[in-house]
Structure formats: C-alpha cells, structure tokens
Length: 90
Image (tube, rainbow, N blue to C red; front, side, top):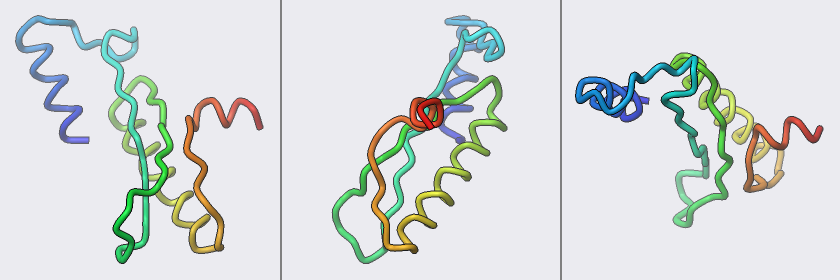
C-alpha cells in the first residue's frame, strides 16, 4: 500500500501524470498470496483489481487475504487467477 502511494506521489510531483484515480489516470493491481509460515515455496497468487481509491485497494487486499486464509484453513487450495474476472464468472 505504501509503495503504491509513494509511486503515485512521485508521478504527480514530477508531473508525469495527474494521478487522478477516478479517471483511470493512475491504476494499481495487487497480487495477493498467502501461505503457511512453514512453507518455503510461493503460493499461487490472485490479482485483485483496484478501483478508484487507495482505501478501496486496501480493503480489496484485506478481503482477498482473509478469503485465501479461510480456504487454506478449510483444507482447500488457492486457484491462481484474477479475482475481478472470477467474480464476474460466478
């Protein structure tokens, strides 16, 4: 989250873009992947498409992390993919 906010600040400060997220002039996607602490290998990631504000991105990351933890705790597996596309298909 801090990385996206700092990148946004730099792009606006150096007049690279206006950074207007509502108009799609600055977009970020977050790849969320959880795994048990004892696992060494990476877990499959799910891309969470963001909307028009950093606050929404933060909520999307928290939601996806909790969703993945619940799946793993129930003995399921995380399917790598795009959460925005998956939600449209369901």
